[in-house]
Image (cartoon, rainbow, N blue to C red; front, side, top):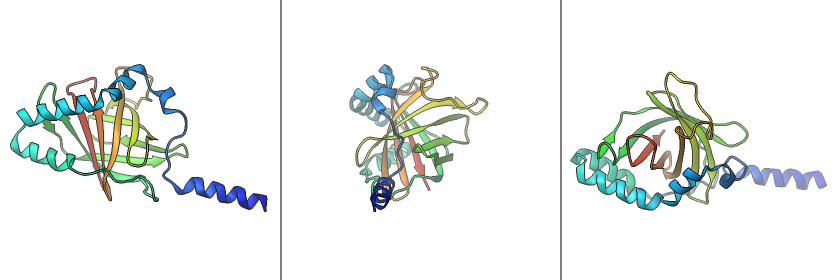
Length: 192
């Protein structure tokens, strides 16, 4: 009988989304803690800069993406699989740049969901962490198509941190505040 109780508890634990275990706060660098702490202000400044200097067509795409309300990650939603993904850069060197679609893949390696951008010259790979019902935190690392992927924490210049929102039945929006290069806010939009 005791083993039935243990099995039931294990199944309950597996019923939710597969997030990486461990203490997020312990993994975050001081720089990335500051990025997340300043997220709202950075986001607002980047959006204002994009709307002030971006083309009307690009602003329309940005507004449609940003108006989507976050949905829950609970109730059996599974991120694993192949995704189309595109980067949108706000503020910084250029006010608003929207790139073409590339390929991303999310797997579950037993420790939680893991993202790899598999095509394009600028890529990312990293892990998702639970941050409540409707938001995840992503810790990853930038690498280029010619390079081997890096783990978060191995190179401070390549570390990436993002808030992740589910914006539709098969859509995600990842917002990277204060990336190291080029822009004030990067968005990685994912669809499947």
